[in-house]
Image (cartoon, rainbow, N blue to C red):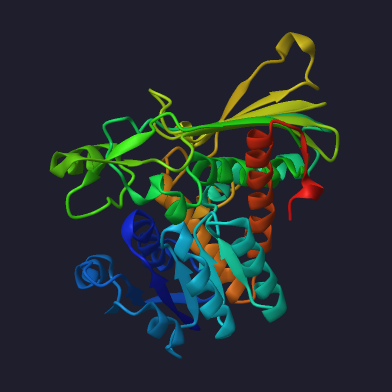
Length: 399
């Protein structure tokens, strides 16, 4: 079978997630082209050799430019901090190579626009790791709505709440605008804007109001580093080595906004990193004229469904366990009915779809491209504009 050598740019939390996916996809699935874990590139000073050995990469490197230029590399996968997405993406596209990139695709809307434009000019496949599309329940919800089971979409409600960024957590790159681009908004709202566009098939026409707040204004600076992870336990432990120096937090902690869609439906979005008691609460509800669905990633194998076409006496929310191989996308690659899958399987399923597309087959459900991610980032930008200027913002103003 044909193979493609993958070059991973970056390490960290997402580096582990992607490495596991590239290493497991050939075991669980039968992709149209087999990915080979050729090279991982990290920063000088990082334990790149240790990372490569642990996760199965054949070659460690501290030179991402050389990794991309290597003629043996056929696919470039980018998991760096947000501000560093554009340089390797541009270099890979200029070298004529397909690119997969973590979300948001860039630290600024301008960079995202340039990346999407270059990908279009080069005519190369691009992929963005909005991995929640590949939870079987989410992919099944997409298929239900596309087939008309909910009728006309009326309302969308989405939230993504976490509680890891308490005031005791020290400074990390995710709290710096120049490195992250934004805070909870770009990290979390990016996911739920993408997931609702994907599942409900709706596009935002206007942001009808928004607020953005930084609740923890300053954080302790780590001695000898800035922190790289997002795990609360990891960062609090690192805080034991922090001194008495503080730096200003320059990103949002929470952003919420209202939207009107082009089909006349309305929606709400909320992201927060200090929502106590919410660990990874990526939740959406979609109401239509014929029924409704709702999903929470904290119960990722389940989809709730309300069928308004049933006789009134038996109408009610039902819980679908989305583990049936013949009915639910991706499940056939993993375990028997009722045997639950987890977070890592969403990445494996995305790796499968990327390999299938590169091998000439179709993805199980649509993969987001650079242009698709740019459209999501336009919505995020419009929400920040609405929050800062305290007014309604039409999407045509933001490009």
